[in-house]
Image 1 (cartoon, helix red, strand yellow):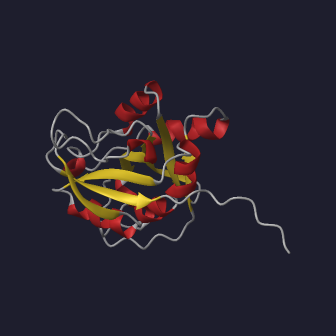
Image 2 (image 1 turned 45 degrees about the vertical axis):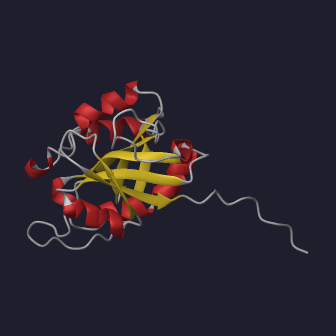
Amino acid sequence: MTVPRTAPGGAAPHRAPVELLRLDRPGPRTERARARVGGLRPAPGQRRFVAPVAATLPKADAAAGQVPFAVLSGGEEVGFGILDTSVPSGTGVVPGTAITDAPERAVLLRSFLIALERQGQGIGRAACARLDPLAREVAPAAREILLTVNTANPAARRAYLAGGFADTGRLYLGGTAGPQHVLAKPLPPAPGPASPAR
C-alpha cells in the first residue's frame, strides 16, 4: 500500500464514505470506475513498491483468481486494489517465498494504492476496514486477508496496521524490491441467518 501517515500540505482528515467496487462485473458504473482508476499512479518515491493501475489492471483481468476493485470516496474513484485467491503456499521451493501455510484459507490483497492527492486522509485505513464483505464474496472459504508490505515502506505498514491488519512476524523474501512484512487480518465467516425467536 502506498499511503503516508500525513498528507502533503496537511490535508484535512477523510470524512466522506468509502466504498469498494468490484471491477470485474459489467455495467456503466464499473466501466466509469475502470476508466478513472486507470490513471492512478503511485507517488515517485512509491513506484518501487507498487505499479501504476494501467499496468496492473489488465494483468488482473487476465489472471484467474484475481478480482480488481476501485476505492471510492464520496463517489469519486481515489484508489485501487486486487484481491487474489491464488495465495502462495508454505511449501515453496524457494525459501522465504511462502506467506502462509494455509493458502486455501487466505485471500491476498495486492497492488493497493490511494491517489497521491488523497493520501494521508484516512481513506486507505477506511478501505482496509471495509475489505471483509468483498473478501468473503471473492473467497468464501478464506478466513484471513493477507498482504505483504516492503520493510522500506514503514508509512504503508502503519496505515495497514491502523486498518485492522496485524504483523504475522513472517517475512516474504521473494519480492523484487527487497524483504516484505507479511500482515494478516482475520476474516470471520459471513453471518448466517438469524435464529428463530423462542
